[in-house]
Amino acid sequence: MSIAPRSGGHRLRGADRSASARRGRRGDPQRPLRVVALGGGHGLAANLRALRLLADDITAVVTVADNGGSSGRIRTEMPVLPPGDLRMALAALCEDSDWGSIWGDVIQHRFATEGELDGHALGNLLIVALWQILEDPVEGLDQMAELLGARGRVLPMALDPLDIEAHVRGEDGQLHTVSGQWQVATAAGRVEDVRLIPARPRVPQDVIDALGRADWIIVGPGSWYTSVLPHLMIPEIAEAIRTSPARRCITTNLSVGAQEAEGMTSLDMLDVLLERAQGCRFDALLADPTTLGDALELAESAQGRGIRTLLRQVSVGNGTPQHDPVRLAAAYRDLFDDVYGDVETEHAASVPGDGEHSPAGQAHVEHENARHASAGDRTTGASSPRTEEDMHGADG
Image (cartoon, rainbow, N blue to C red; front, side):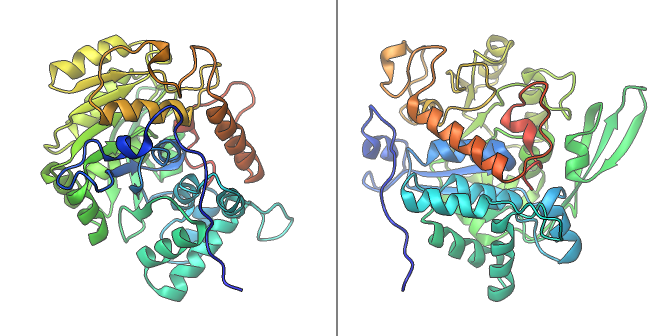
């Protein structure tokens, strides 16, 4: 019996999806909008769950420096890329059909045993198996995406496993060298500098091609130093972003609560990104004024640098620090349509009133929470909820 993905699934409500998906494209007005999203971990996954409601031609470019959880254990046993963030991106692009939901759960399933399989995500093992059989990480990910019926493509940012090393100023005022993505993301203190090892890894040609043909390139959200900035630190990727005819958007985090950003404001995070942008020009910035205390200052600073600012509520709005995928999709629809002004509640039928997130978004959030729980996200503290960006590495 042949296995083929089934069509169907939820779409952005209250909008002509086909028209929205074509706006902002260059050349043929009939072709789909081409969007490239760069990041890693839960921040990128949240982005992809929104973008898949709008666009058909999505490429996710994913960091490959994860050294925690299942991915970290796999890296120590085999000379392969860490599969965890790639797996999460694939799961996020799964359709909301029965097929997509089932297979999304399958690849996110994490074993709970008393043996060596304990803590491993099944999707990580499937991806590595495809890599070993096909001897090509890009082809392996394409095959996995085809099986899942994923709405888009997932690519590694590099063909070599990366390590992250940072200088962190601790509570004692001393500068410490911290090695490893998970260690940097959870280090106590403020990151002052970060570098990749190797500094010039091999970059898939497919990544360069996707950036060159994109209509929009979206950077963030995600762990700033360990998921977002690494893309701008690889010369070939930075050059492809800089020379692409695409428009470029920075999507900020819902908060700056991550340990690696201790003591920083969202304005500080923007400064850090632009300092390391290697000449890349950004056209737009998307921020949630309901979760960021300095959103207005951030907007003024961005606009002073020629970056148009889109302020929209994209969080679920009930105190839970997570994105509502339908709200975020509605914000991107405005971005692609050049609608930058303040918006009344009724502007988008897909976005309900303040303090009440959409039923579709709630379904996404609840399903993803269940998925993370079944995947064994053991690092989440019970005292206070963390933003999706803070959770990088927890699901490796």
